[in-house]
Length: 593
Image (cartoon, rainbow, N blue to C red; front, side, top):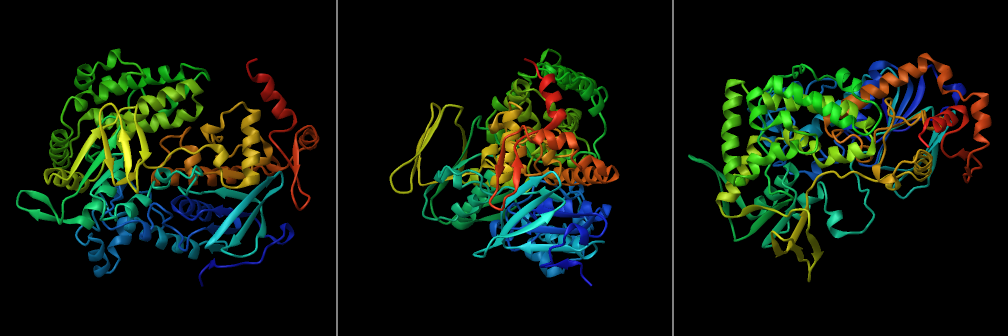
């Protein structure tokens, strides 16, 4: 009998079995991996999952109604952390007709293949159902609901939710995991801002636009351009390669700061080998908790890169490089070339590397190094973090966000047909609505009037004051204010993905809300990171259960609450804002004056 339930009675603390009653808000990839980690660890008496959409698993990035079949994922099967089964094992047991409809009948078992995003969505949906069915505790799924608020309290959490058009209901939980993904967080009302993410594909369907501009040249930008191309013509396989035939004249321009195109995905050993001289342990040892930590970590990275790829390192001056100019050295050769010539040459190179299972050592080293940097970035001081975003982040993102070969083939075919170009806007540009539906784009390097503008720059970091749940937002903002943190930086939770060290009231809320983590954890996107966050949450819950007193407020904590600002909710509950007790006072004393 399935353990998945659509509704359940609200248990009181006295009625619960051993383990915690846990809420997961969001049933996309992060929520699915979290459910898997919790049920494997058997740490809950009941799990309730809240999902705004009608289907658990895909979330927005892999939803069938938001993605055309042409939209490819940029993660191969071998890299996708398995759930109940790997994506390739799951694909192999699908009906042949379904595989043919997806276009993966010949590659279902290839763990180096890139599948359409809707395939990943189908896999996630099936895995969610299997996980719930095999769970040792009841799993309740509430789809089509809006979570309107979350309240964190010292002894538990409250979730307020409603079905569409219904009355608000409340439920009490021991713990809440906020696994919200990339829903709308920008309330500026800007038309361009609202055409982000997967909405780009919908905008591309407007066949009346003779000239389309696409902000961004990554895989999201390519998908938007290809969506437009599909409505205005067709791709054909020819003896010399893929070609595009337009049904009527039209053109598209991809806009990026530097006019670069992404590189094609390259072969690499899996798992990646460790680097000499540069590991999470050595990087952590270089962190002194002060500005300049980035330079010490970069010095280790440069030493590892020189040891791993001495010829490339010498040609690019790695020995003389700094954390601030390494990106300029890395991109210099590409910027000196025609973007389309480079893309064609790069595609030929990576195909050769794939056939021979030999990729230049410097690429493998940089790919591994980004994993090491990811372990220390949340601890960087504000100045160092800003420097990383300006420089090194661009290198790592470029290297690990290489795109499927077919995506490069498609844009090359569009360019050869005279339909597509890419331009560099630089940093000084202006975009404004024109007459009707047109847009005016002005920069020193390129200016035009276009009939359609698509913002395909991918997920953007969200500011804390856009956090969706008002009471929890107030608690988080108060904690940030007390710690002297900028709200624009979003969230920077502790190692257990809570803010319990800053505010004990938040010990029971795990913050896996991706847009709000991006500023301090810029590599948090992707299924690998979703799976890792889920493991972190499961481990931290196990640790807190092993030391049950850790979550119980002491008498000193309760007295400390009296000295803190509080708010009284509509039901009479008193919520203390920000940290309390001696722990908070000790932290304040430790801060520089």
